[in-house]
Length: 540
Image 1 (tube, one colour):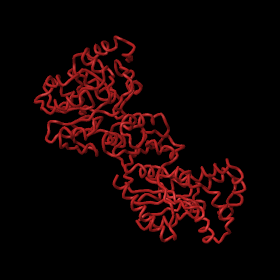
Image 2: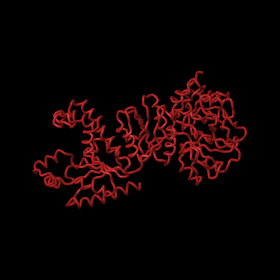
Image 3: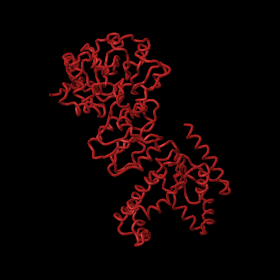
Image 4: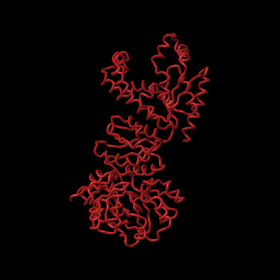
């Protein structure tokens, strides 16, 4: 079959021709604000059967009728409650599907054998015009092959449906990006069957109590009949298996970093993409931008099929607002294979020699923090981490002694006089050390990363807060002299070679200045500081 592609913005007959195909029982890919749908006359059983065949869709998976206004509800639904009109007035046209009692005119094939039917009015001018021209309700599930990620562009539709259906109408990219929200109005209280482009919170403003069906968060069991599209079957899945990681953005990012293999792919929030350099990465948008996540999630899942990844790890937004819909789609793509990375706090500490970082770390430890000394971890990995040792050897030659220890003088001769070589060494160390630090942070509710190169290594992106410990240079000179038994001249040279205070003010979320007259006094100052910081983070 040759699939025609209509471009309504260029072809004035496109809408009429698409409507004519639907009127004679054909299949047309239609644009909506949510995702592209695979449309047919919802009252024509033969046309509806062809939808299931084209998609490879299970016959008990119900379809949604698309109508141009609430005036059409009584054509296809019995006992329409007043609240349905209230919802339609508030949210139609828009990404809301209402489950109502069906009239006999609606075939059971359309409803998956149910005595109820889902109805919505899409917020897309082209499709509303097609429905009006065809003068029939359009039954339209998402226009993907069954199980694949839903299409949010005409190109996605063409990829899955070219040669299977009569036509595809190119109406541009979908502005919402996840399917409609489905609310069942045949039960009391109303029940959310599928989260979507209309947040649950918006429905609760109108309906009051809304029950969330358990299929939103977990897989239906064998023999359970779905009451709405997408409730039962594995959906939205790329070819590679997906693991969804929940928890705070920093914790989920750290968990993923610690689990990656060379063939892993990552779906993540924009802020964390640099952590996964060298891997196939798809970004959802900034961590707090749920609307961006909903627009990006299906494209992210779909495009992995053109890669060689063997597994995909996906950061998951929290369930507020559109996050519930995005979380639901990711978990369905994963077959509900999820890992909770937790919501504990990870705090990064950095600072120059003599500023008082040790005292600050003791304060954090008093509050139950697990302190990870990244310098000590680096030296441990130099002794025992075979991949890092191998990478250093490949880059700089045989710089390890027969007993396995690093020949620092030999390596130093290569890197200390060559900035490019030093940058290469640091890149190797960071690529191995940061994932190992992330692995060790898991399982601890409060973590303090002690890292001189916290910012440069990229470890700062794993932290909810980064704290620069500073102190006046004259104070630092005296402390270093007393602590290390060195001359004033050498102490000043060491400080001059390190970052200045402006770096910490510029690069860290917080700066803790050590003005105390003793380490014990600064430890108490730091204790009050971290107590306040932790309270701020846990009450967000």
